[in-house]
Amino acid sequence: MRKDIIILNAKERKLILKDLEELFGINILPEGVYFCFSKKEKVYLSTRELFEINSDELRVNTFGLHFGTFMKDGFRLSLEGLNLAKDQITKHLHQINDEEFSLWLQGEDLEIENKDNENTYLVIKHEHDLVGVGKLKNNTILNYLSKSRKLKKVIL
Image (tube, rainbow, N blue to C red; front, side):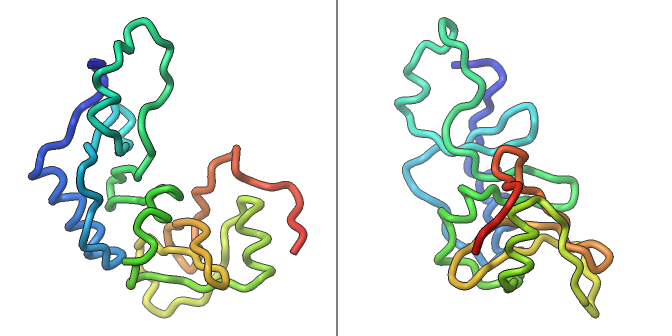
């Protein structure tokens, strides 16, 4: 097994679940998979078979499915993690319209009117699709969409 991979134990798994419950209402994590932690504080899902591969002879950038990232202010789901848990999400949903969706896909932050002005993570929803997770800060939803997923032009 690689030295830079840490397999999370049951206690650490419960900490992730606690954060996800508070933030998004997610109360069940996938069974039969390992939660792994990288040096960059990213959490990946993998199976036992992945650890049976001799990765010393391979050039591996990532492993498993990127589930989310530990941030100093909570756990931020990745787009893959978001879609894996989409049926459970009941909290901190923010519905956006077509214009905002276009801006979001281009990597723009969204300005909203929020009386609570919480510093929390929001799940961005367009129609019936969950399209990302952003951080609400000072009436702005910060876009964490990776550069490789951003679009230059969106046609709806």
